[in-house]
Image (cartoon, rainbow, N blue to C red; front, top):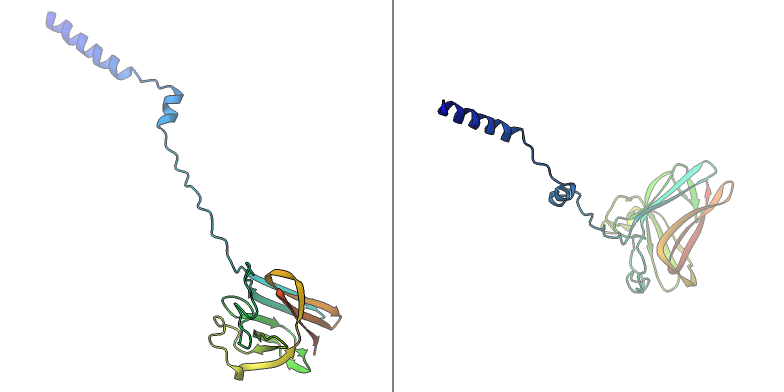
Length: 195
C-alpha cells in the first residue's frame, strides 16, 4: 500500500507540473524581443538627375530629354566643358529632342523624328547641331556627317548662376516657339516654326 501511495504522489506531482504555466511580466518579454525592422541607409543624391521638358506648339509636340548636371562651384564653360569641343549638351547620355511635326530651324527643315542635340561651346558664338544619332553615351559616337541641322547662335551671358542645366520649350505664337538651354551663366536660345 505504501508503494501505491508513492506512485499516486508521483503521478499527481507530474500532472501538476505540466498544468502549471510560467507567467512572465510584459517588461521581461519586451526586453527579450528583437526587432526585424531594417535601418534605412540614406540614398546617395543623384548629381545629374534625369529631366525632360515638353510643350505643344500648334500641332507639334516637342520633347527634350536630358541629364541635368550642377555647377557645384566649378567653372563650367571653358573649364569642365572645354571650348571648341563637341558637348552632348547634358550629362551621361546625349540629350535628345523629339518632334511629331516638321520644324523650321535657321531656315532649314528638321523632319519629324528623334534627334541627338549637341553643341560646340566657345568664347563667342556657339555651334548647335541636331544629329540623326540620338541614342548614344555622351558624344562617343558623334559624327558630323549625321548632322541634320547645324547653325551658330550667340549666347546671352548673365551674372546670375543657373545651378542645374535646364531646357525649356516655349510657345511664342500659334505656330512658333523657342528652345532654350541655360546653365551656369550661359543662356542659349533659338527660335523655330512649325513647317
